[in-house]
Image 1: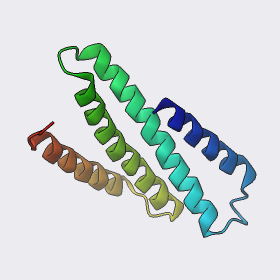
Image 2 (image 1 turned 60 degrees about the vertical axis):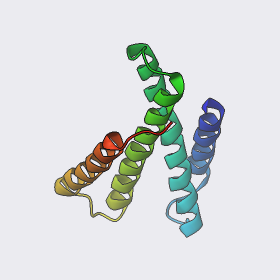
Image 3 (image 1 turned 90 degrees about the horizontal axis):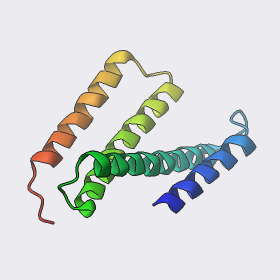
Image 4 (image 1 turned 120 degrees about the horizontal axis):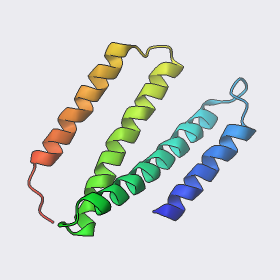
Length: 117
């Protein structure tokens, strides 16, 4: 996971420094957002797994990584939605609150669902 995260951050950095946003086409923006999503996903998942490993010692590492990855997907998706809305000048404080509430409901549903692993 660490290597993939480093590759994603490298790809995002290359896109960031080599693509002119004023002359970019749709594919350039797509690569920008996709590489940033995977970079955030990997970083948040690694930080979450390490934090869980330090503070929660009674569970198996595999389950901690699954939970960390799920939460990283939700947080990365939330950040990307906010960036996309801001890019279109549609981001307001109540949009952020609605997005956080929606992600929280999905996370609560995932927590309440029985794990079969």
